[in-house]
Length: 406
Image (cartoon, rainbow, N blue to C red; front, top):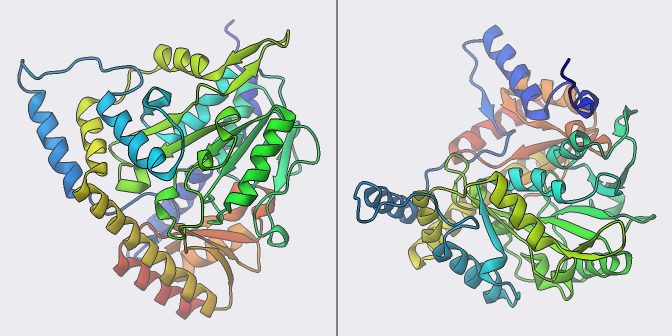
């Protein structure tokens, strides 16, 4: 008799976005003539930048010739990409990161879910609420939590993000070993100042904790005073691991490329109190379970850092930010409280009613798909998240429908 990992039985019935897809599918089957505008899941809709496509084509042609063909690539990613990442994303902003601290992967979702494998199962984790569900679910699967009760898992330290604290969590009131953070935030769209982020880094030093910092949406920051990386903050190299993605930055949701930064100064401890560097642990995990991203994809990602690529990527982000501005303006005009949407592609909206009720109302009356805030945690109840990832025409049409029906 083969036994299963019973931690999986603690998981709630379905992944949030699967629930949404099911409801939308049922509505479409019942109303085949109704137009549906999807502003729920954060999937991009515009084509890859031309600079990336040209590099992609060149690399694909290289794979067609014996003299330029490439098989297995370097475990951490090709040096040409890691060197560009370091120069443009970190060194240019005063962050001390080196190419051998970069691990290229096929997505920040995968890395934020997999990173917990290098930590013990009996540690205390602190997670924001509301939160991207992957952070929670992967720790449930690993056995770090208790049962689900009254909207939350036992043995998780939930850091509440509410209107009262401007959706930025306060420092934990009790010790935590592993702290999840995301800025610009998914789902609320909020950002954090460098001074505020410094208090978290200082707290991690004091408590010997590690911060897992998800910066997947940093490309949407337009306020130059805001940090794009946690490594812009003093002392972060010793206590933080950062995750980045090209999915929203350059439209790579379908081509898959991202990276994780694990500084060589970042350490954890074994049961005897001996120090171990997390870089070597993650390197071993990465090399054992992953065979890097394909050569053509990495060449396409490298093109993001060319002068042509940087201009095209910024134009892409600006396009979605304009959508976000329209959404926030129209939802505010309709009488709803909103945050996010200025340095983020997400708008967090107080719906004045149950989250799923608001979701169903927008779907059935306006033909607009959003994401119910309750799916992101207990503190998300009463809110919805609307994504700016769609065409300008669809966003304008969606807002006209919402204005008419609410």
